[in-house]
Amino acid sequence: MKKKVIDSIKIFLLILLLVIGLALVFNEQIKDKIIDNMTHTALKSKPQSLAKAQKKKTSFDFKKVKPVGASEVKEALTADKQTIGKLAIPAVKLKLPVFYGIRNENLLRGTGTMKKEEKMGQGNYALAGHHMSNPNILFSPLAKVKKGNMIYLTNGKRVYEYRVTDKRVVDAYQVQWIEDVPGEKLITLVTCLTAKTGENNRIIVRGELLKNVPLKETKVFR
Image (cartoon, rainbow, N blue to C red; front, side, top):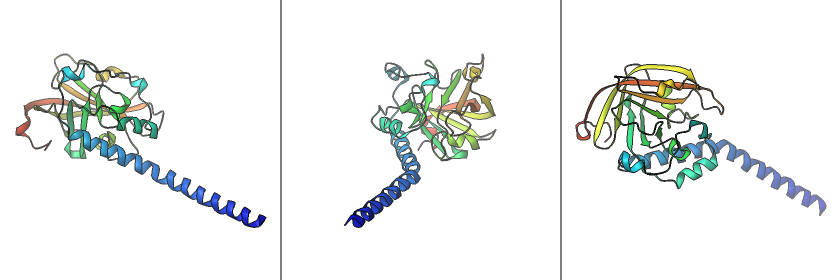
């Protein structure tokens, strides 16, 4: 009888270890799938005006951005899904919703504005996003961007077209890259160099504004 109990415990422990092992293997895939679904859902929403978004509480403190974990993903699922625009870089198959501010919930569904008053097509429009281990979601595709690639940004009414003029790796303290440059209309995209927790280097992708056209005149966001 005692042997049967011991054998049963061993079988239970083996099954438990197997379940835990499978969970560890597929956890990352499940998390990536949820993030990808949140991104596509947000892309379907009609962007709200910047003025309306500015009335809501958000954050612009990069130090408060947390690593992508299960609890953070869970919180993002129930957060406000209202966007202020969309971003696309066709050359690397990147298409993301743009949110006001860099709250954790925003960066787990798309990309967020890094400054309170920035406006599309004016100054240096700076956006931040997560670099994931999956090279196809959130801001991970920035690693493949090249000079000359086109960047498209829309507020739901007009499309702002930029051409990439610079791409480089900087350390986390070189915050001057998000500041306005007198007389220039730019876009600056920022993400971590790798998906590793504690990564101190950043990928910077910068583009110069070429023109802006009505949304109906481009197929990029259709």
